[in-house]
Length: 199
Image 1 (cartoon, rainbow, N blue to C red):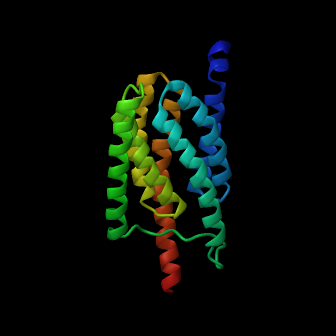
Image 2 (tube, rainbow, N blue to C red; image 1 turned 90 degrees about the vertical axis):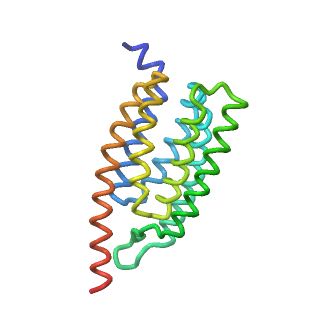
């Protein structure tokens, strides 16, 4: 038992920081970004060892977008409640983001299939591309990012089960549940903010 924990120590610590990241995200607390930075660094190590190279690269992106999100959330705060307001994605933005995500998915899938020993290159590419989009949406505080996460988390659970990453599989089960909770909480907050701005 001790050997199991020792072999997965980095992954287990990454899980703790990831749950903290998600908790602060649901609560709309800016502390989510440093939690995300630490989690991203640890998961780069985990996914390199598991040969999920796209997920490793994705966590490099998480590291960069966490810095961007931290700056954006800090600089765009509403003076009334001292935090960035929740927004909804427009049709135009959804179309552009969808096309970019499709292009990223096809490119990553092809690269993984051609140049790596990734066991599931296109599934790995899909979760990676969709996660790029969802994290950018979170940095912009767009409500619908939670819906993207629910889809990504469900598919990721299958991938991690396949690769035997049990702590991360359990984490993504928690993620799926918390993403649904996050969507409900943010939607209520968005409606409340809208009512206040109209009044």
